[in-house]
Length: 201
Image: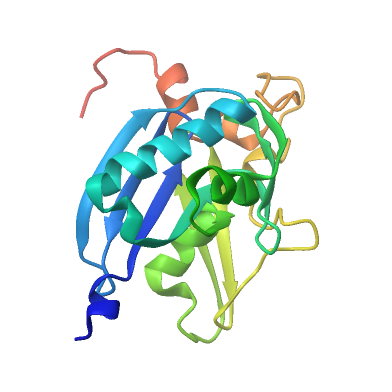
């Protein structure tokens, strides 16, 4: 293996509603380092935290990093790196990819987090048919792969099922609507709605 291949280090970042995590991997996908910090709200804080956790994960090897890949909630234009509607972090619109590249000095690529998970789960390996990868976390979303091709949709919102209103007279969602699916079907909502602190098995 050449030295260039061995030093082809990359960082993967997962932006969540409550935490931001990063891993440093080599060309073979071996995890060499990791870091995790609580997520803060607002555009500036999100960018600062992504760059900070990426640097923590890489440590002294940050200068060897060739690319940063970011999976984030919200609608994502993966070509431009622009992200919209990260509801749980109070982000309406953010040029995430360009700002991460500017502040870190490393090229950054941004994808919707559940789309990235769908690809990681093997959904984009040329498999025939349609696959929906459902992610049950702070929010609720799906990654959709059709005949090996990741579906982004016209506005980058394909799979953003958590904000489909299903009961408009019920709970208010952080997005401003009432009765979104994720107000009753997500990790955060189940935690809020479960009647006991120690649920039975």
